[in-house]
Length: 161
Image (tube, rainbow, N blue to C red; front, top):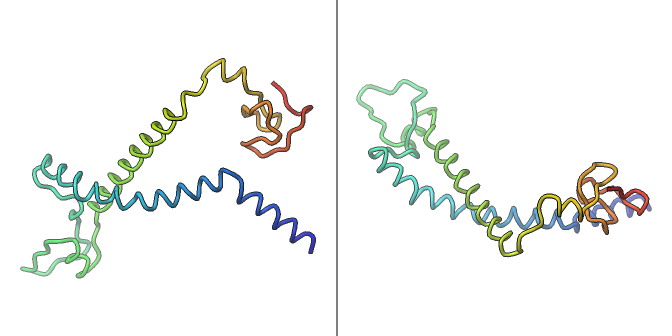
């Protein structure tokens, strides 16, 4: 029974660690933000690309993977999918555009947050303030008791420059 309490305590410590909570918040915000980015791509970016490319709508681009019946013209992706398998490369292009826009927006948000936090020291100044973990050799704060990278327990004899 004591082993179960030990595992439960370790799990609680793991869940309450700052990185896990930050990740959970990021996933939730990212899920909500996905709708906004999808709408931006579908309603703003794709029509602009369509104008630039002469009216091409990527979301409705596909290749039939079956032989169409004579005189049965298929106009939309939904119609084609209802009749048989299709290679919907336009949907893939739209997904790639969604991803790229999401990456740019997240980059800009993080850059803005870093500006609001203030610039962090770089180069030799940062190296002088930090020490390296003796286990994973990543830079750590000299006052740290646990490495934030490998989670090794540190004591004063383990901390090295």
